[in-house]
Length: 236
Picture 1: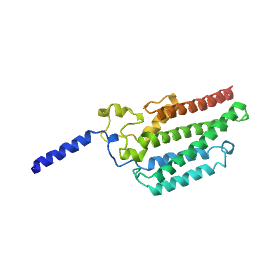
Picture 2: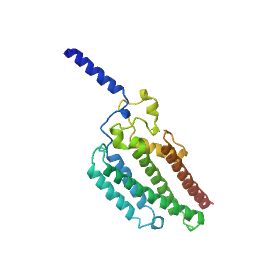
Picture 3: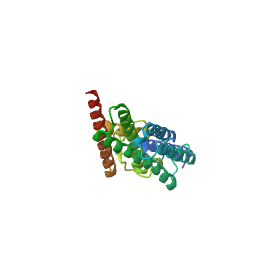
Picture 4: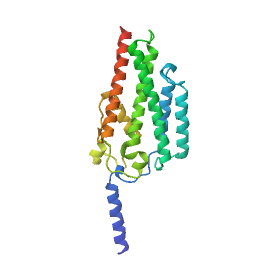
């Protein structure tokens, strides 16, 4: 084979590889910093809650979460492309702590609002409800992001071809950039739209994705309904 033929063949192979959507091929992996920012925001929202809405002092859970986040960042500081069972375990442990603390706060707030224990000053409770609702959006965004196609590291190595969520760019690849693949912000948008419209904007395909989206919509509906009901009673 001549040099010209080799060069032509190489170009054809590279062109064929470029035509494969980025989410189906090996990539460099996502940046660590968006998830760091999102978890710091969630910890800040938890700090804004009064102590009676937390099962320990309000500084404890955010403190543990930030320590775990710092350790994970030091272990994998730049790109989320390192496949490690240990890193994945502690990442899921961090997310579990964040979600469990928020569930406790949501249940406690709901109990207070239903039983009328909040007193006449409803402002702090309404602010707490908003913080819990926003934290819920962040938590579910992270769950979607952690499990879609095996998580960020598995997606970077293209371990699975079958997605758990069908984003619009996957259905119309010609309308997306050549290097497009789902990032954390896409899952955040998915979580936000599911919490506000009580239905996902992007289609969940797998059963776990459908059940998780359904659970989020239910939690969001109950939280918003209670907050609105309390706000209406205050206005009256």
